[in-house]
Length: 190
Image (cartoon, rainbow, N blue to C red; front, side, top):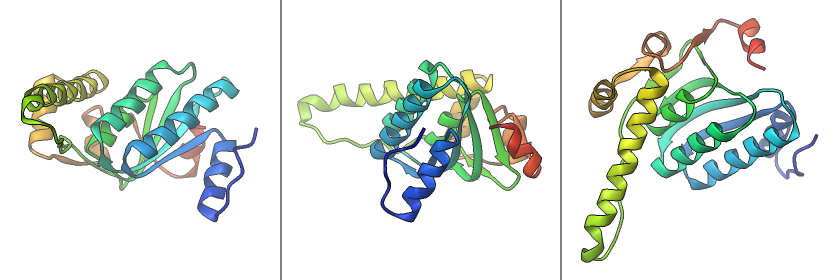
């Protein structure tokens, strides 16, 4: 299996990882990144039955982009395992939380927060659009509560307070399953 031809070195690395059933969520999770990762996940699902590893170093992003990935991960026929490194902020936490196996490097930081929502509309449309955005926010909290097995009120409190957790705290709160301790641990998720 080989990923479509790439033109620069960072693209080459993503192609190399793709061939090893890995995809990367790095930077701000916007619609373009969510589309790329969703496409790669669906392609890897179609190409084989082995688990896929998603490396995550995410600075938050768009609620709709995150919920797109949550939905895609939920319908795949293969397990998606996450390996968190650096930081996982805002909506990126929900993407990690719904994966089959959730692992983090020991210095990874997790920042819980509600995404900033904004929209422009005619005055007559504003109330309806605000309701849609609030429904998406409620869904985001519910996804986190189900995945972490924590009460919804606790998730909302963490997000309101913009709580930040190290890897050990994230594990005790159900955000991740395991802290990687060296190369042997990393090999296990492949």
